Length: 466
Image 1 (spheres, rainbow, N blue to C red):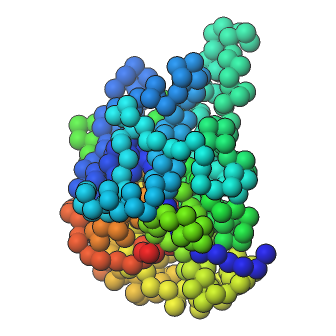
Image 2 (cartoon, one colour):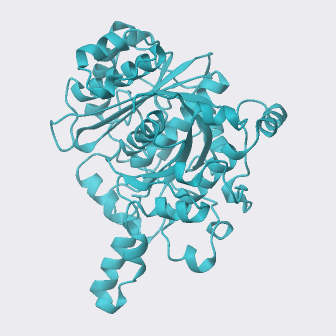
Image 3 (cartoon, rainbow, N blue to C red):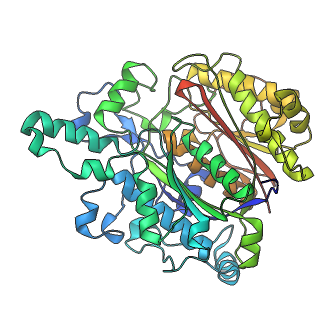
């Protein structure tokens, strides 16, 4: 297929430590509130690191029959709730969207918070041909709590104690099946896993599916819950986590700060409904933003450490910007069809980036490599582009983070407000325009969102205002 269709965002949802709706997530991040708390409970008592971002005040009974709710992992509850919110917003008419936006202030159609026990209303019949909508569940690990609980059951009670639901709902892509069955979606349902770049790459795959005519809409859900004792201990033993902040958890996540010492894990889910522009306009949907470009790469360097020069990350950013440039120029092939990185450099130079929502986890090596990558991809102009690192507020949702930060990027465009980077008291890197301390009022037309993960996985997305 040679036709390349514009891809837009028409719905968003979130269940995160920062709030149980997309609007609540944005409100918290824009206000500079930290979602990081000390973790309480017996499973955390002996851990070296006992802080993280937990989802609170979420009522699974509002979404599922009790019999199904208890068979699913919490991460699947959150994924379905976020997906429902994104679908509900996307299905709202343009008139409804405009009325709600005018009534509320700033930015996008809102739906009730998931935790309020009043889930968003998704119509029984979705406004797309059911075979022309797909579902992608993006996650680094999936419902790991189910496998860990089943292993304990096997050790303590023998084979008969292992729940049969593990085989049904224990796979990383099971949330895609749950959402497909829930809403009668007959297009492909699948999982995407690329550690902490999973969400960004899931969105990129959805973009490509629509752009090249294989779908009219794709629901992309990022989900992760690695706040159990096993995963926390493993990351702490690797010295990847910020340690010693139990007395002041909100100060732990410190991207680009001289005192940064590691990332802070969080749990949650977020969803974005991507749709072809033609489909959205034909049905009178409100377009929130355009997903204009996507790039991905691998470092091929180390199991955990990024390439010190940001080689793979820079390649992903270049490809993303070249993809956006090709789309603007009406190029039917584009960088995804075999263009070299030299060609990507030429395309990237023509794309304006007004704001960067950085991966920015707060690891000493990762933050430095990311800035090197941005400078390699954007040139000296990279230092003049305002940079926010919102994991300082939300914590690191690992495989879900790319979708969480896509929601934040869209709100940034619509609000004309750049979210702050918390705890950036003493920048470790001079000459960069970090948005520090408080949000900055500034109209922007494009946001670059980056995601990088263990194993050298890299993804970059470019969002544009409509």
